[in-house]
Image (cartoon, rainbow, N blue to C red; front, top):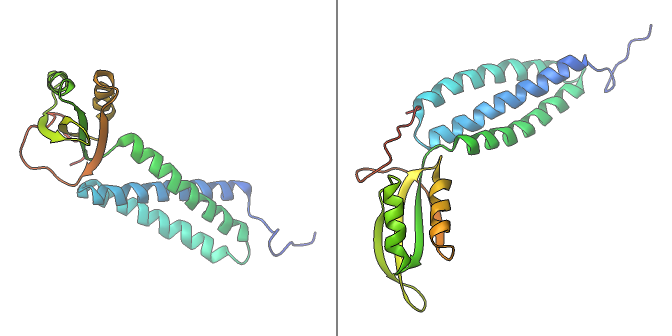
Length: 186
């Protein structure tokens, strides 16, 4: 029986699938690790980094050692990397680490009503008098956990559909009134 060599001399499809899936897991872990470090969650990032580097060493060495004999392993590796970036970003969006500053620019009339509703839901709200292009306005500022911040923006939209809502990520917060929900990761 002739021995195939070159590009079409493929390893088992199970091995290609394993390389692809393992690379997705490794890159997903790396994506989450990077985000956790940037948001100040050092302890879980350290644990993830150990798992990530162990996976990388073994997967990359397998692919690199066999690249001339089995170039399809390299393709599976590259596709797994690409898919891992996507999967990691989707998971991070679902986990929603960190805090956000939500600012609602609303009318003078609706500002106090909206502030009261948000406070009733447990939010700390700071209200600032402002001047818009043509009239006086109220600016409401709320610091919230990123996870669940959509409930606050939904309340703002229900109370004042014409409000301008601005949401920014917050690097850190000291003092003030924050949600009593504590992070499980820090």
